[in-house]
Length: 170
Image (cartoon, rainbow, N blue to C red; front, side, top):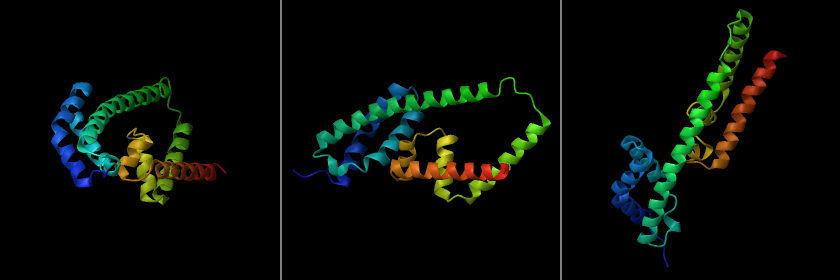
């Protein structure tokens, strides 16, 4: 039994795209988000052509993938909301102390400098994770690398920033 070629899988995906977007839109409640999730699926599905034996299996896989994408979207959005509410709580009741403001400014300059010393991929992974709230798997998909490599970039970036901050205080 031979597997689908990349082109055959893309044909199945294109044929199902409208249905995939309808499924996603009904689950996430937003046609634009559904279109974005379908586009993300397009990039992820390219890696699995060799694993699907025929068009019917590909259809089932793609429809299941759409359902999972909607579930993942809600998980990520929920995590993002938790992070934002947690950040807001961190700053409740904080009064501006001039000495602390100077220390904070110095630390920010050290971190900004440390970030410029990092390779571009490390900076991008840190940004996508900490600012965009993406999971390591989502970052791996976006950058076309393995989750393991994303984790290595993240560790490298965080350790580098931490080292620079520790050097500043000593």
